[in-house]
Amino acid sequence: MINLSVKTSERVDFIDITDLVATEVSKAAVDSGTVTVYVPHTTCGVTINESADPDVVRDMKMHFAKMVPKDGGFRHYEGNSDSHIKTTMVGSSETIFVEEGRLVLGTWQGVFLCDFDGPRTRKVYLKIRAG
Ligand code: ZN
Image 1 (cartoon, rainbow, N blue to C red):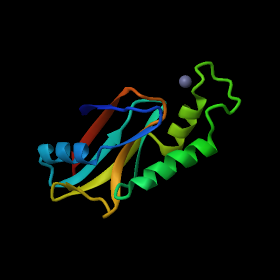
Image 2 (cartoon, rainbow, N blue to C red):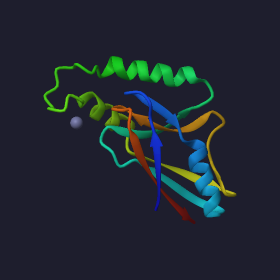
Image 3 (tube, rainbow, N blue to C red):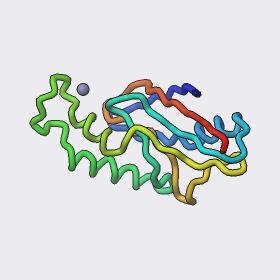
Image 4 (cartoon, rainbow, N blue to C red):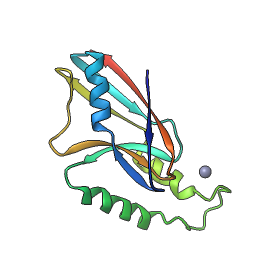
């Protein structure tokens, strides 16, 4: 397992980690296989979506805030139930195919760490498998 750290700078922050993941895949010298990107947190997840136009991330953050407002009348004592709910919506892992030592992503796709309760330093675990 590869253990990486990613710093976020806002309460809700999407960090494009595509290059970080691609670099580790390249170092692993796996020609064909998969990489699983796993985030071991309850208020921070991972997703794959458009990385070309930054307005897509802006719109997603805005819509998540509308769907799950911070002050939604939740009971959880930490006051961050919105962060937990949004994390469950995006999920904690993604698996990406690797071919010829490269991530198999669509033209507009990128891999994003989605922090919903930052800013913090978040862990990202990678598991790269041949096959
Ligand atoms: Zn909590």
